[in-house]
Length: 252
Image 1: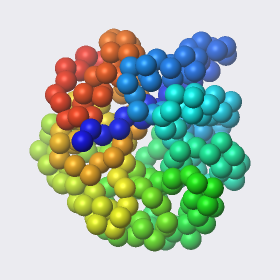
Image 2 (image 1 turned 135 degrees about the vertical axis):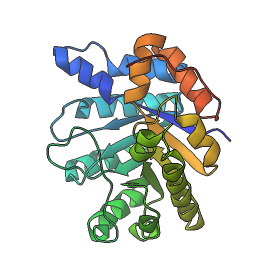
Image 3 (image 1 turned 90 degrees about the vertical axis):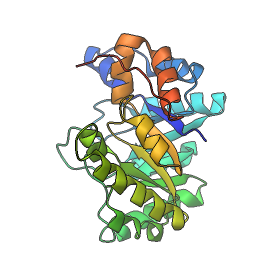
Image 4 (image 1 turned 60 degrees about the vertical axis):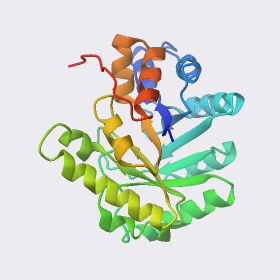
């Protein structure tokens, strides 16, 4: 079964913000991605509004609802973020830890130490009908604690695998992801994944992890779109989500 592709449009918002106007528009990009076959859309709303803003969350939630696809909102422990997720009845909320000064998400929750912090947040959102997920490092020892948080899914942090791809450590890192997925599946927790997945490494991961439900991809997809066009790039990532080999553009 093909893995669902949720396109993260933060970088479209970042490019827009760099100019101070509404070009490029995340709304237009959202429709283009969905027209090309994306299964859903993702935004990570950070407190500093460096890319996504509250208005973007509202806009893309409305588009996803209109188009009949899932909207995944990512973010940290801020109460206003959870209130917005509940108000908009987002399809999925992925709780991601944030370290001051970080450029991008680079670590997952520390379980079970931080379970008392995140479990009440997840419970409140679940009570409002929101499917919940948490961001975890690909350490099989962490996965045994995931179900106790009350999350419906775990998003596995795939940067270590991506960094090791096509090196002698590839099989080690891929094996860690597979072990994590197996532990989660046995516990009744769904498996998502994201961070630095691209057309090079995604097909191998998909073929090796049959219980993978969804990948969230933004940076690499939009970098490829500079050369292939947005619609063609989404179509290529959809093929990769079926485990099919693709021909990535040269971007670096």
